[in-house]
Length: 211
Image 1 (tube, one colour):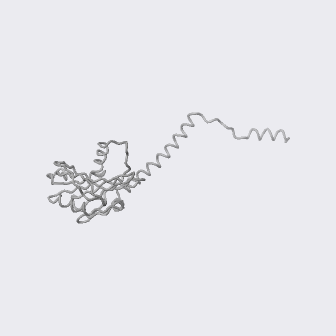
Image 2 (tube, helix red, strand yellow):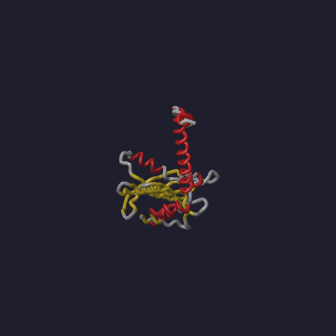
Image 3 (tube, rainbow, N blue to C red):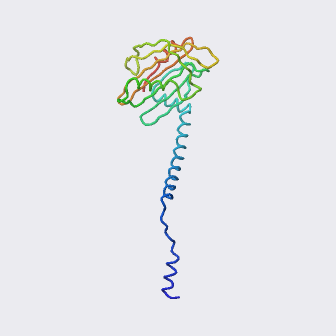
């Protein structure tokens, strides 16, 4: 076999190179996006599951402040993302007669005061139907209270709360306190219910020690 013949056979045995069509490129990109999305979904599910971990939720709350809830407490929901820390805890009673939200959230100077107050309302109840109890405000006023080492005006709402569809409303009290700390806002929303709701709210709020 001559050298010319070997060269010809070698040339004929080379793997051909086909140009990738536009549709093939689109399918490749879509496949990559699908893989990334699947990973993000898995990460999102993991974050959500961790957020509903009672031990972790209370640990986040305790990292922001100390509090004393009569009869003990348990975490409901908590997240810690960047400069934002949010956590809800409640009393061990059934149904719960104390719900405490604690949080540190970045301040948005461009947000109007009304929008900021509306945002705070989103923190009144955790993202859980089990812990959500409709609160009807009957009267609202402002009090000067010590919070995080500073005397500030806090909002006190007096009303009633419906614990479930089969029960009559019970007396309820809500304290809302906020304090700016540099680029973040520290926010506490304390809700108590029952015949001694006012006393419980006063006692628990007085026990708060910010960290």
